[in-house]
Image 1 (cartoon, helix red, strand yellow):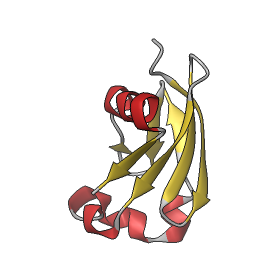
Image 2: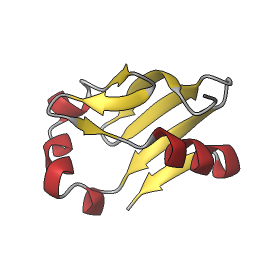
Image 3: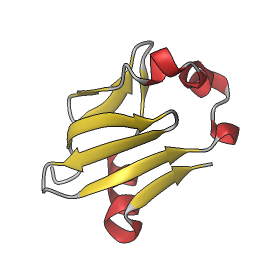
Length: 84
């Protein structure tokens, strides 16, 4: 699928650079207000930097992941996906 993530890298404490299967590249930015519930673990920079690609999705230890289709749509249209 075009929205499969093929590369991800933490580029700052709350931001990621992502690349999709079709070559689209963009940024995911977390606002602190989004880091609640299961995402609270990402407040720890050591955990945040453990980001990886698993089966085309952005994931972290502890079964945390992001929906690649929603991320792709936002990045394709705006160049970034801001999680508020």
